Amino acid sequence: MRNDLEHVEEPCPYWELEQTKQVSDALSVPVSGGEQDCELPTCRLICERRVVDIAQPDVLYLGGIERALRVARMARQQNIPVTPHSANLGLVTLFTMHLLPALANAGKYLEFSIEGPDDYPWQYGLFRNDPYRIENGHATISGDPGWGIEIEPDWLARSQYQVSEAS
Image (cartoon, rainbow, N blue to C red):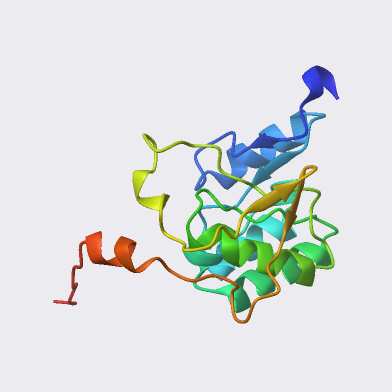
């Protein structure tokens, strides 16, 4: 590929499906997207119309692993690989690491945040153990029970709590 690009992520505003489709059709480099979409009908349109070459459902934006699996199945029906969106080193990446092995159409990569403490200070010190072991370019999933993590009590103690109520 030109300039060693693997893909172009979300080249247009995410809600502009037709614009994204035009870019996707025009480029020889694969276009990825769908990371901000949280409604299954929109995800279905993205897959059925082949708006993108790589689908990027976000486990948390979509509302859980089961809904992300639905999107992955929609993409699979159109032979579209899936590289789930995971923008930070909080729980979204951990959930994505557990989701990827279950996908028959998993893409080649785990989206892995390289942002530092100035970008997302809240994500540091969250876990008592580091669940993000990358060795030789490969992520490994803990064999510990559950998600394989333990939340750091001091992180929770420093956190702000807020309750929202529907009006």
